[in-house]
Image (cartoon, rainbow over all chains, first blue to last red; front, side):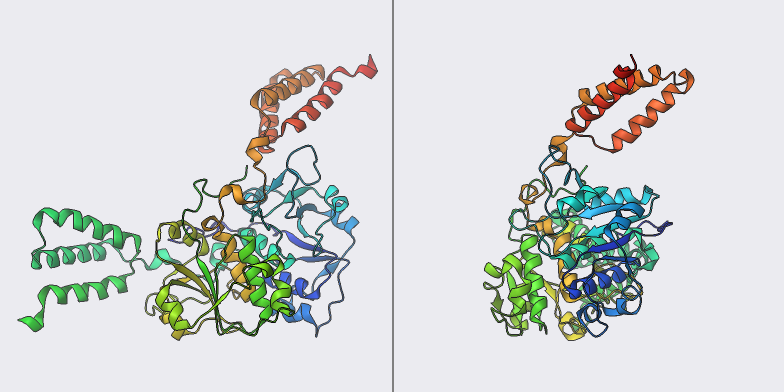
Length: 254
Length: 254
């Protein structure tokens, strides 16, 4: 049922670094650090950061990332960032077409999740300052552009929210399938023989209720569709079976 | 190239409402309102909200959603929410299996994006308070569970970030493909004849360079793979063609 378990081969390389350029608000740096830890990213790069007071908003917003991602962050210049990393600049505002390559073409985060696993170079996702984002001068020195699809009416995400969505979408670069908190639903789906017993019991109930024989097949098909979609667990099957048996046999009516 | 254009039929129904239960921090309500506007959602429901001062953090964090989503929010009781909507409770912490149904089974936001378009009832995505989230008592009254896959080590997203990721993933319920800010990359990909001219010019260059004939085919295949992946625009093709022609003809060396 879970259609999005990450590649079970898992990430076999260092996940991308996350670079924040000229953040104005310590809280946003903390929010980004928290999203990094939520989705398995570790390397935080800061260009011209605000002061990150251990008693201030950056640490306050970072959750458990206050223990590692945030104190281990590296401060560096934009020059060094552009030279040492394959840089991916995130912006809400793209150019419309290839008359101007500063903000075009773009990839979406989902595109990057497909393509980046084959890139071997050290890679950094670059997020810009609040309000104005990355400047054209910065974007011109960046290797490629990433943009989150959003409402045309108001596509500009807050800095921390943009980073959160991007890191969520790229989590397969940082987390193995077994590294998420979610139990595997496949493992608990009821075995087919149990589900077959359930349909047999429905059949018995319909017969007991004198459901018109000519409608029986169609009704059974509907029931199969309903319970097929529901991905029943064995426990659910057993509970339903008990109810249906009781409804069929009506021991209290004997 | 963009693998994630939303269904071109577009949403033909009202997108889900977003309910926030007992938020402690006005800033988080503002963050959620902003994410709603970024991804096309409109109906904000508040159960036991904090005071939302027009000069405070809720409005400060809401961006353009301060103009509509936030002032149009509806305050209601949890009882009314549970009665009037098909409720989907979002939580980082699921049960492991079906011995306890309060937090099991779960859907991921990606699962919901596939399934919800077929649900006709008024639907609300329900987000709980900071730190403790939705209580077991609340979740027991909620119709289904949604959980964002995240790092097992630290799967608990901040309230605003969890809502942002969920709304991003469900944006196809609220936005038509044409409603996003991103231009359609397909539209600007160079036509095939232009790309063929590019390969012809590469072939001419290889010949001019006396590239070994027995390797020619393999090298051309590699070039096709490289430029095939790059989704060249017509302008890029023309620029490359100019460079390659010049490299082939070397007018300065005549």
